[in-house]
Amino acid sequence: MSPTTSMKASKETAPGPQTIPAQTVLVEAVPTGRKIGEAQRKAKTVDRLKDWQYIERSLHRMIAGWGRHFTEWNDIVVCHRHVWEQSECVRRLRDRLSQFPGAAQNLDASVSVHLEKLVNTVLLAPSFEDALSGIYQVLMGALCKSYQLYAASAHPIHDAPTIATLHEVIGFHEQMRLYLRDYRRRHPHTIDATYKAAIEAQLANCGDLLEALPIEDLGAAPVGVNTTFRLPSTPGRPVGSLPGYAILPYLSVDFQNSIEARRLFWAYGYMLEMNLAIDQLRWIYDGHFMPWEFLQDISRHLWDESRHGDSGCSRLLDFGITLSDIGFPPYELSNGERSAEKELGLDIHSPANDCGTIAPLSPKELYEAVFFIGLIAETSHFIVKRQGYDDFLEGGDLESAEMMLFDIIDETTHVQYAHRWLPLLAQKASVDNSGYKERAVVLRREAQHNHLENLREWAQLPRDPGNAHYAKYQQLLAIMREKQPLSNKDTCGPRDPLPM
Image (cartoon, rainbow, N blue to C red; front, side, top):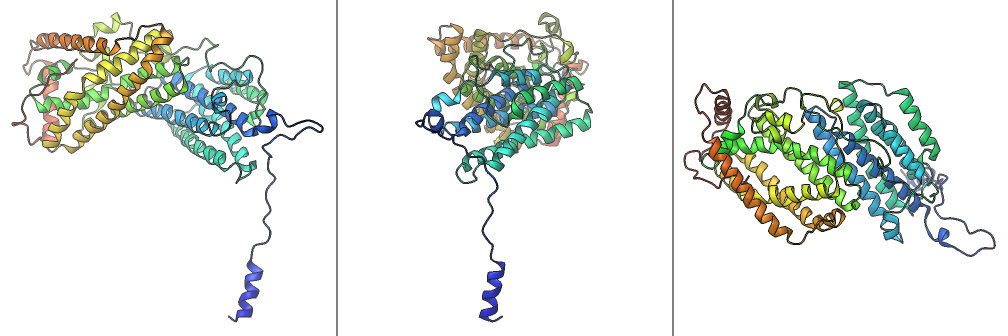
């Protein structure tokens, strides 16, 4: 090709002037004859972000509020991950809001009460299945459409950070909505027509979330606060997961002197931590009086505990041990004390929606829950967990060692959460928090003493093949031993007893 031909081809294929799509200008015009006021000094983006953040926080709280109704293990796991991911959606919007002038006022500013009416309508679903469709399909779908239209109309250079943030949030929501599609294949359901119409009417009252809404004198309260919505008193549990055997007393007695018992204990014990994650849904729903940063930390804590539960379950499955083989009891029943079910008002045989509701956690109850988990339960187990990690690593069971290591990492952060938030929780609950560390030391000693008393009692339990509980315990140990023997089974010395 000659130079002349090349230049001609270049001219013919060179792009012409780019046509920029019609865009929304994100600053207010100055009225004729008036001075520039505060409205003109603020990007319209700020008010949009405030409204979006309120909706995202409401979705976060609704997922926690309805989450105790899930009954299948994998759905429970996904719900807990959604709690964390939804908190990340909120965090991203708050991060973008903080980049505008007046961040302190913007982050928790009032929004229109019409938005509260919208999210309360979604929350008050006639059934759990309707709630899932209302949350993930109708409201989340309208919100994603709002984001997409904003991203298409905002200036792609001037407001690129907001557009990037919205794309990240849409990514989370698309995965959540894909989960609903999978869930509906397993649990077909058509949303109640009246419920759906009510949500759509409220969306219309909110301009379908396509513009920022003016704020009335009385701003919106958190979703659910002004309703009668309550969480179920007993969460749903996987079918067939009620324990048929009480193995924990034997595991606890043998824990100090048997590495095989410790390996089974930690896989089983981590699985039981799913109970804490389920309980922490209440911390989030009932903790609306705390700053967002608290809810963000608890969302991560909850997801971590759920991961620990799934980690233990996964490790047991590596050995071919299923939930129905070993059981997934509430903590209150893990020692085989079935009488506790009646004493504690538990009804673990009923679906969550048939067991009544539970009163909201008071600030004092939330304080005590955070105190106990952070400064008693988690702090007291670090030594025995590190010993377990060392022993499994030495014995060649790297998967069990890995399970221990990541739990230790997570729990270290959880204890920091407790230290961070106990002072403010105490203030909200009118509780004296002075000397809380000393109080924790005393309570950890009491827990150790009580556990040693239990060990003395459990040491008297029958240990013969005719006892079904002991036989099951030995069977589980044998399964793990055959699948992956520990090289230090006969050389690993005694370790510290369980602290509680």
